[in-house]
Amino acid sequence: MDRRIFLKGSAAVIPASVGLQMLSTRFAYAQSADFGSDEDVLNYALTLEFLESEFYRQGNGAGLLSGKEAEYAKTIGADEDAHVAAITDTIMKIGGTPVEAPGVDFGEAFASRESFLETAHVFENLGVGAYLGAAGFIQNKDILQAAAGIFGVEARHAAVIGNMLGLEPEGGVYMGSTETAQDKAAVLEAATPFLAGAGAMTGGAAATL
Amino acid sequence: MTNKEIFNGEAVMSFDNEHDRRNFLKWAGIVGVGSSLAVAGFSRGSVSAQAGGGDIDILNYALTLEYLEADFYNQGVDGGALSGRELALVTPIRDHEDAHVAALTSTISDLGGTPVKSPKFKYPEGTFTKKAAFLETASVFEELGVTAYHGQVTLIKNVDILAAAAAIAGVESRHAAILADLIGGNPFPAPVEGTATMKQVLEAATPFIKS
Image 1 (cartoon, each protein chain N blue to C red):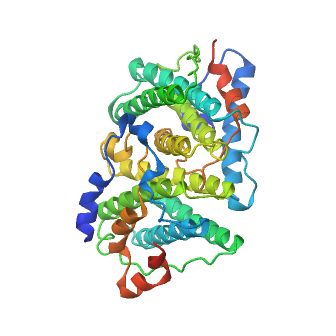
Image 2 (cartoon, rainbow over the protein chains, first blue to last red; image 1 turned 180 degrees about the horizontal axis):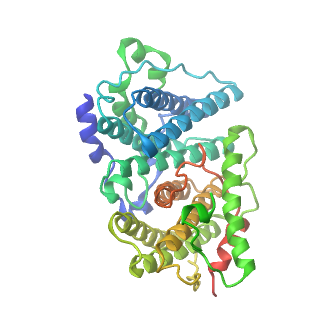
Image 3 (cartoon, each protein chain N blue to C red; image 1 turned 90 degrees about the vertical axis):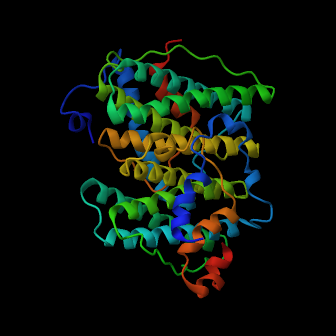
């Protein structure tokens, strides 16, 4: 799947209106084989956060935004950095081994303000779905609390970036009255085009994904 | 940031009495403190840990807050203070809060519980006719809702209910960020959402409950 398809396909991945489907919202999306431990979930999240952190580092360095937009993107980048640091720290605290940052390739994402923000919008919504899909596997209450707290902030990012793009409020800024979970396979499929090279695919991070 | 900075000195809120006003402003402080604590991250104990009365109680608590939000946005959208992009951004929020009320009500019933009835609400004069007053109040409600949901995360026992509550909480975070942007506030106050206890949240909501 190339990036263009990824971007186009994102609207289909995350339904515009979930409506009252909430009652059937379950962690069922997440298959029991997805994660064997809290460390697995955390390393999965860490890989996504590495991807986001590096994305904003490069994007914010490209000088595509100005004024309030630039400030927002800078804060979002700092949030992703904080997530990387906090998750890494937590994995070590529970005696695990944090994955290394994956190699990345953002292609033409930084060609323009629009492409930067459009890709950011996809990443943020992907993050929202990934956290919601993985939350049900978390055993430790403190880790669950923190993961939920990060999930909410990713949703903030997604909404504001959607608004910066001037998207339709429903389906662009908001994604229905409830968020939609995504399982690991779907998240991996969406993230793979941005993970660079065969080395990344066989390295720790991508293998964990 | 004070109201004065945001709204050029116009008084945006007028409460029935000084106690209500201070209670509401204190809430804004709690939100800020909660967010700062959250930055400290994973090492702290669970802030939300408290005596809980079961998942039905938590759902009824959420339902009460959603009643308040739904009532507030229905009056706000009908009030005519908003237009253009602001109205376009706020109208779906009203729809979401209505959907949350409906979903929570049926979930409670499905679980064999009894959904609480909606309280009657009251708002400071001008809340629905002055744009700044409406958006400022909406922003506080959304931050309140976010921290309320996150405050229950570790207390919910049923994993499906947790999934549903989280799915709603994420939407409240989107609302909170958009409203902060609309009032010139900070959409991203912290890298992790803060939490608040039921007691803190209900105390903040009390000024708006008539009966």
